[in-house]
Each structure stands twice: as structure tokens, then as C-alpha cells.
Length: 245
Image (cartoon, rainbow, N blue to C red):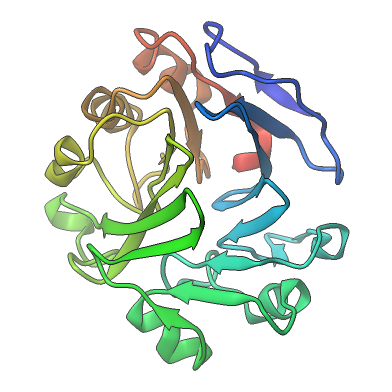
């Protein structure tokens, strides 16, 4: 496990965790007493395991010369895609992870590329199982010179609710004003990579709006880890992982 910086503090929601199936992981206990395992795969790719349910987010089988063994995961019950860029939508990885019952959830441009799955637009909700829900939320650039990367209303972030535990996966976004309306998060995955997503300072501003118990910066690219650590120094539980570059 190539953990760059384990903790700045100790999360009240932490739970015992294992790295199976070979990727670093973080585990949390929901208010219902169940364990949520998060696998940290690479860049914008993460996975959730909860009460026997397998959820993949933006799976990508190969990027920047690195290959990721999705065959080591169980077949997914749900695959969520935030948008259609190559580092988020990979038909090969989706095929590897899919079984007959797998539901692929994606935005409109993602559907146009894949030509299958269920489209969720900003504000749409979906019940995955009893007590498990997801809401698609806006994800876009708000810096003038960067708006071409991720235009407003097109792409998704996702808020997952696992029996009362709220987990935000930002997708490619900056610190947009809508975050102030999302409500408190237990865990927040915040994309931090210039020029496409947030600066370390924007990441800290996003975290301040979301008030998460645990902050996990991801989609890190060439982000300066020391600058990110400094920007987030006021938050009690921040986890930085090299794998998420």
C-alpha cells in the first residue's frame, strides 16, 4: 500500500479494513453499523463494497502506461460514470466488470459514447437497494479560462447515501457554489488537478462547504502534495494516496 500520508487526524467513522483485492482501501462504519469499503484504484477510479453490493466509479483499465486488473474485482452491480473523457469512461473496463444484471449509470454525453446504460442528469435520484441511494449533482469548471474542459450542466458528480452515511464523489469540477447546498458529508472525494479540476486552495474551499468528516483528494495528476497538505491542514482527517494521481 503506497500511502503517501495516512492521516492528519483520526476519523470517528473509521473501521477495520483490508486491501483485498489488491488495491489500497479505506473503510468506514455507517450509522447502521455496517462496513463501507472504498478501493482506491487510480486517478478518478474508485470502487465501493457495501453489504455484498459492488459499485464501480469511472473504471479505467489502462492509463498513462499503467494497467489495472479489474478482473480481480467481483462483477459490478452498478457502474457510475461521471462523464465521457477517456480517463473516466472506458468501455473495456465496463465490459470486464459487467454481468447481465449490471446497471451502468452515466451522463448524457457518456451515453452517446457508450450507447447503453441509464442516464442521470443533475438532480436525478436513484435507489440502489434498501437504504442505499445516489443523487447526480453538478460538476463543472467555473474559472473563465477552464470552462471549456467541463461545461456547466453537462457532467455529474454523485452523492451516495449508505444507510445514513453520505459520500460525495465530485467528478471533474471546481469549487462550485452548489456545493454549499449539498449538505454535510461523512466522506468527500475531491478532484484536485490543474488545470482541469481544483487547485489545493479550491479543494480546501470545497471541503469547507461540505464539512466532511474525512477528506480524500483524488484525480490528483501533477498536484503538489505539500501544497495540498498545507491547504487542508485545518481539517482533522485528510487522506492522501499516491495511487490517485
